[in-house]
Image 1 (cartoon, rainbow, N blue to C red):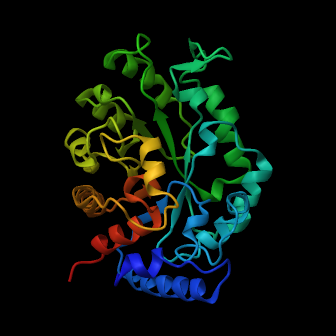
Image 2 (cartoon, rainbow, N blue to C red):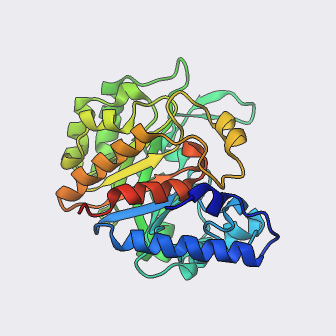
Length: 327
């Protein structure tokens, strides 16, 4: 994309200004050309969508974050390259049925979201009101997953539900499971998951990424999430342990460059309207993962966070350029 930073990161006019509208129209036009050259089976999107700094990149005007959170999906889904999105709020609390109905009303028929399972199911420990870590009695509870997430999705959002991401946060110091014990508990949980939805595991503890873990995923037809995150190996290194060829589909979540931390990147990158820290090694590895997945006729969902390079929709553009059909 020509002069990307100046065209899409430097518009200073007021909300709804003609300059911003021109910038967005140009961005959409170039994105549409790139999208037309993408192979089928590639779903690109961002980890969330409510960022006022994306005016002129995704949105036509500078709306408040609260308004974008409620109504922004309609315009987000018009972007030629944004064909999926992450819904993270389900990690922290159940999604009310009216909210799911409102989301569905804003999305086109074929648009599917990547939805995080609740921490109440995937966290081994939780903080009590006194901020003390306690064992979570609902860790890997199928009943809790059903009541908090799967049943609401089935009732109000099934047509837009893509992979359900089961993120396992790092174990608290002194309260951890060794890899074999983790897999012993994960095995019956995966066996009991309803077939109505697709599932992908995201690990945040590198010691759990083992050959036995790969075999367990393959046995249950569950995907691995290749994350780009502070304390995990690079996505390509994860693929050395869990090859995408073994999986029913692939999920990539580009969150934070390994060795960096959320608060630092958030302050350095906001308002998230330009790429600040491009990572060519990461982009190359994502391209390789995608091509390996697509070669088997399988889908790949790629979600980008602003804290990966500075502006997730602009990183999506750069990845899409790499994934175009080769001449």
